[in-house]
Amino acid sequence: MKEGMIGAATALAAVVIYGVVTGAQAPAQGQAAVYPPPAVKIQPGDAPAYAFDITKAEIDYVIKNAPANPPDRQLRVVDMGKYNLGVGIVHRGPTNEKPGDPVPVLWHDYTPEIYYITSGSGVLTTGGVILNQRPGQGVPNTMNGPSGSGTAGPGSYSRRVGPGDIIIIPNKVAHGWSGVTDHIEYLSYRPDPDRVLPAGWVYPLLLKTVPPQVPTPGVGRGNAPAAPPRD
Image (tube, rainbow, N blue to C red):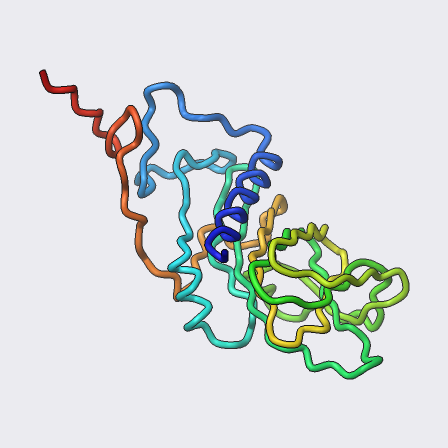
């Protein structure tokens, strides 16, 4: 089940990328994509001509071995040409609030987020007035860039979410968790048109592996042409 959810989340990421990119073009016919990236420097504004992989094994490894805090682990930030794109995995434990406690929320100045819930459940509160606002101090984090925190106020909206749910949170919109009795885990996609995230970032624990290559139908393996049929 979880493998299927992460596969669906990967498809969602493709939709997000397609919707944001406006100038990227597919390689010309006969032009082979290269992986790993070529040594030639890509100029600002150029979209990569190769794909980036984050395997389930890598995600599981990070979740198992990363420190408990912060619960947000930015797996990778890719320079997509006209914008950056961050992908993170977030694992939060019980919120342990008492009845009537205000909901703590965050906001991000420049980076929207798209959540895809992979396991667990909780109450997600978004929008409305942010009370007790506290802009972030010091160096912005690698997950979301300049951000702030506060508590949910009038006009906020709460709902319980679980596996398979998708939530789109624009930048500057409050969002926070409550009602998590065990855990909530989700992938977070972060388009970054203002380039506040560090392009090229890779989470330190991310496994440095390349998925095994398989033959491409009609092409063969990698840049090698398909072998001609034998008589």
